[in-house]
Image (cartoon, rainbow, N blue to C red; front, side, top):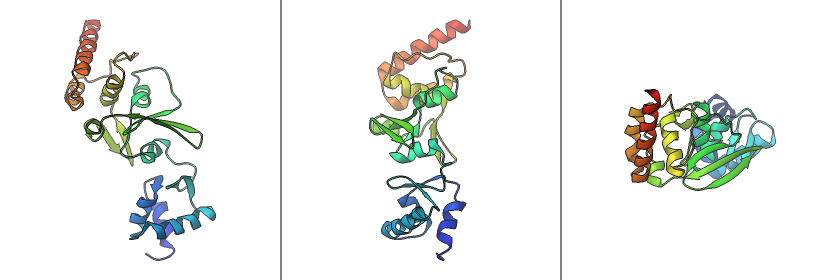
Length: 195
């Protein structure tokens, strides 16, 4: 790669958040050590922003949702973040909630990210997870099931927008009888309220 193309290749990328490994691949570097040296130079000169160790952005206008799925991987945005944006709950939450392999709360640049653990076989199954614009996010039905899997007594304000056929298609990935029973109870209650 020509010397002047290193920064340009980052600026042209559709991503807003980059790991050191992403940049090494983008630059066709065999070693991420050389990439780190170059990255430090760009950060020092104000051409890039270091968000946290190993994560960089073009500027401060990076996507917080994209960052949420890059801090710990594998991960996807789910739970209250999706439920609120889809109108299933009316409470707005400032933290971004993420399905991950561990339970952890991390603050980056004033934004709180809450990671909630799901079993590997659930986390790695992409049924009901959309991968758009460098972001992995649960669809409303997957977020609904993720929440019930973690908390069977969770209260939802509005379930009218749920597609129950999709809920029932996703449900088997959890392999959980308690969850299946809870979903069936909620489904029957919703159908009764529609009558």
